[in-house]
Image (cartoon, rainbow, N blue to C red; front, side):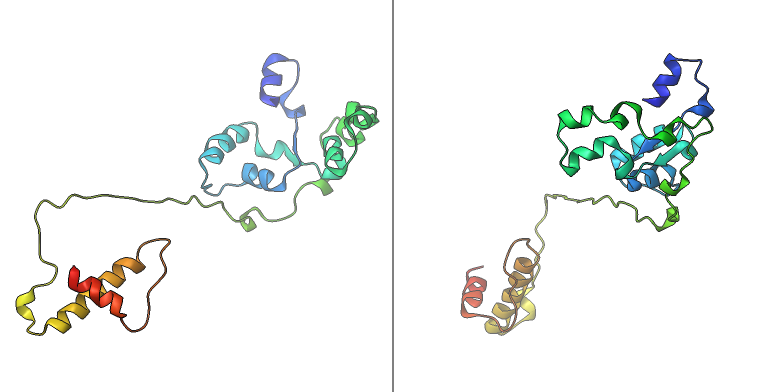
Length: 180
């Protein structure tokens, strides 16, 4: 919005335009140089940085008239307050923000990056059938049944939202392996 304001009113000198945000995290994202792992932030932050990140400053909630609504003041009472129309007195400073205490003193690299979670799903069609278990290698049917039971248990435990099976094989698991 500030960038558009300057384009609309060219008599405004860029060095006299300052941007304010009441979110310290947003200020860190704008001023930071680290890799941001969010699609929205990857698009928006570079645009905001065009106007020099040192022009962005933090406005604490107590200095933000709109924040009074979150503290219970009615909209009717808000529009009758002086700072709703005039803003804080320090906003009128010609040389920029004079209340540097509102700016953030935390090192930018201390802010943890937002990590994008990526879920990968794939499906495959098997054209040829390969035996997972060569029965010629075993002479004991009970041993083969137990091996198949453990394989089915592993498959079950790898499936999301299923109760994980542990301990000794149950009779039910052995029956399922025989049917398989």
